[in-house]
Picture (cartoon, one colour):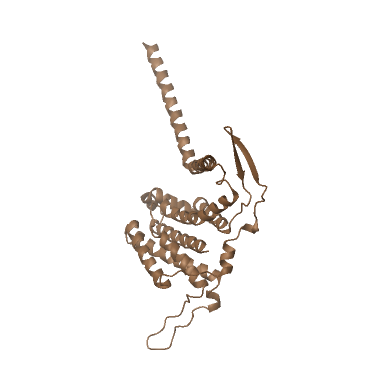
Length: 307
């Protein structure tokens, strides 16, 4: 009888250890998929589109230098916009005004550069006091001033969102959606619903590539797979300035969220706001900061898109 009990105990221990090992391996698999799943899925998409392009068209037009350059250029704005929204999402909030902030940033930037927007002193009623330019006009139509002004308008939008949601308790869905309509109406009032052209030297610079580099025409390889030959021609590949800008912004946000105390506290607030509050973290302040950062980054995306 005792031997049977010992055998049953040994069998139970082996089963328990196997379950623990299986749970540990499943946990590692989930952690790896959560960390690298997006990159793996992106690689799978590239492979699928490459193969389909070769099969359907008989010619490789997806993995070509010109097409990849176009993809980098078109994805830059969305990458910047998504990186800003990520900050709000980490705290468990959502910002539906980012599209309006993007449009506002591009509009304000273009208005200042074209000289159609001048910040003036308020005029005192019934007097001739005030009304002049607050800053020299030569400053206000410069690239740096226009960029800072667009970022400032974005900070104001984010500040309003943060105060309404964090301090007045309004749902982020309702508050940010309502402000989006106000921002769009304000921009229509500024531009009269018309597009604003940027100076040619600005657009030429934005459409340029990093250091003027361009891949030589001999960057071409032939790969055999499954009895078929795939031609990959990367001649003409370049790094657009706006794509490099997006990469720098993404790296900066990643560094902020992972390596700084403020970023780690934002992550803690998103994980458990009540526990963070009991630990001494000012939850409302960090939510406010997240909305401000989200809106400022959205206006920067608008500046990049306008170029």
